[in-house]
Image (cartoon, rainbow, N blue to C red; front, side, top):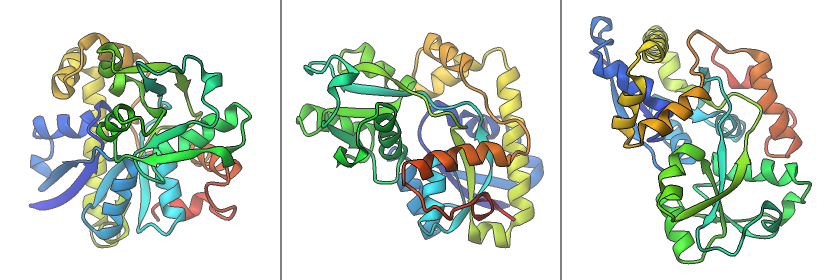
Length: 283
């Protein structure tokens, strides 16, 4: 049995991996996966890909690009979620911040430097025509860390995927002031250089299986129930999320889609001017 160590955030986007395992789709292939949740997000996943703790991971597109540009030991294998991520802009429910125009100069909680919550804070700030040099960050490790930082009054603002934080908004712990929606595909599947060089055929077989799982999940009329049970969210929230989400269902390393993210990161001076499509993808 060929085992791959795979990781991703514990969020509904990664359901095709779990659905694939539950349906025993890998059994005929002689491949198995060991899945690890990473609540700390993209920054932690990049570290584990670089160290060899993971063979493959689903990463936010912007974080994957930033990580490779910073010397990451992995490459992008395929797109995973075609639709853009809906980032909720959150404050503590009891905060005296009630409008987006009040966020200038406030402290932003981020999971890690190089993570989506870090990089998208720059994008949102630029979209408001505020100087990004004024941004101040508090590294909190993930959503639980952001909750603690809010309670301890160590941070004022937190950007995170809107539907993941919705239970905290519904419970009156967070308040959402608005959204930031980057205009590029949200998630990619990445593979460590070592796994790609030594087990390329098996990696491609695993990729094919998870793409087929995405198709099967989309076609399953019980998908909202299955996802809501796995991630302990309401079916109503999952149905609303599914309406705005498109998983990748084919082999896809479209140059224009990846360049859309690269150009935004360059505009924000978050990656080197020299980084290119060819630097990022498997060969």
